[in-house]
Length: 426
Figure 1: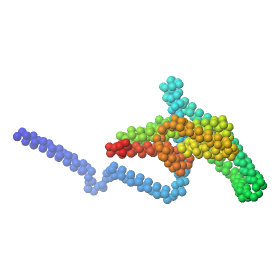
Figure 2 (figure 1 turned 90 degrees about the vertical axis):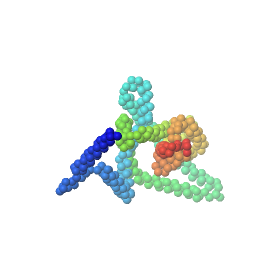
Figure 3 (figure 1 turned 90 degrees about the horizontal axis):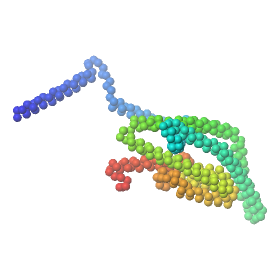
Figure 4 (figure 1 turned 135 degrees about the horizontal axis):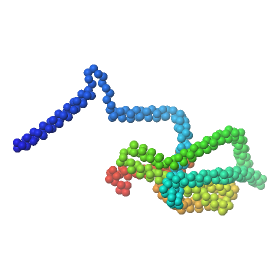
């Protein structure tokens, strides 16, 4: 018993000495930071308060900028418009690089299989693949400008001449009817058509009077557009060649601002969104190009007029899901109807068969289930995109909505997992 008491006394003494030592160090530390009499108090840095001050300053600055932007709406629009015009070449370059990147990957893999020696020279293989893709792309653009565009202009001229001739023929036919059936009054219809012709002629004269400034403005716009396109083309080459450095930059930003345990989830989300958007964009462009070419071939076989003009309309509008085939078919039917009603009916049947082939065979092969969206949501995306961003919005609305849908589904799964539930359980 005495031995235990001695051990407890020793332990209590050691603990008391430890407390005294800690208290003494605290006192000495306080004495060091204490302000001696007669001296001014020094500023002591506090990281917590400093961070709060920074956040408060950023919040006040953001509110001030937002209020200024709302008050001066016109100046804000002008500033944003100028900023968009300034960065538009880089945005176009990003779009070009984004579209061409899958083609560069495919050509790169093909070259490595065809020439096994390129396996050891990754950069050389990438450069050759980029050269092949850019040469093919520029070749297609040059071909369109040299051969297709003049033919489209010629078709438009013929169409205007046909409409003018049909207009005159309609007036002559009405005059003949008036002479054959004098008891029926066609004068109001003839008068309306002649007034319409007079108004159209006067409008064309006004346009001709202002043609010089219009041509000047159009020329300046074309030159600026060509300059922006060339800049975008050059920048897209650098983006494609340096995409690894861009990826590394994105990774640095992710690791800098996102907690380490969430990095993999964020990377998976970004990769899946990129897959959805890229797969749809590239597949739909290939699908629309094939449909446009098939339309031109079938119209040549059936000897229908305005082949290139209508085929371009069908191919471009086919990029819009669901509504695109109808938007492309209606102008073609109306144009050919002005020339020959029978051929217009033949074209309508042909385009219906072509769109069935696209919807049942070609589209599913190329697109697959790239969006995973229900028809209702696709129509909703097209409607909202077309309302706010026009034709481009109608085309891009579907992949954007598909990406947002994937993000929403992922978030819902996360919220349900926190409650030990799954989507299938609900």
